[in-house]
Amino acid sequence: MKGDRFAVGSGSTFAYGVLDTGFRFEMSVPEALELGKRAIYHATFRDAYSGGAAHLYHVRDEGWAFCGEFDVNQLHWHYKSEPKEAIA
Image 1 (tube, one colour):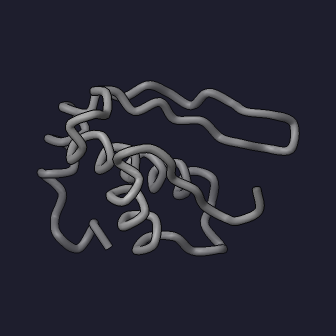
Image 2 (tube, one colour):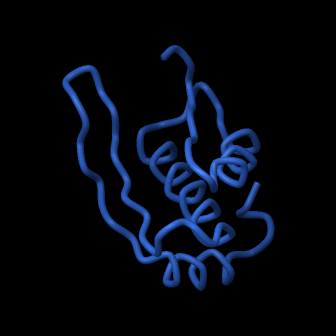
């Protein structure tokens, strides 16, 4: 597949909303990973058929690198406590 961002599954419409809002071509790897984590959180938290964990991977030319597993409930409280300016 060609493209610069993807979301699949029943929660993908929620993830795309986050990705379309926050994606920039000049993002650093940590910024991209945070955006991915936020997108997965929104997909899983808002979708009844998704699981309660966000599994984050960095896809590189050399292959996939696991970057962590995050509890969606904990992410919810983390993101809920952010100032509104930090969301955009």
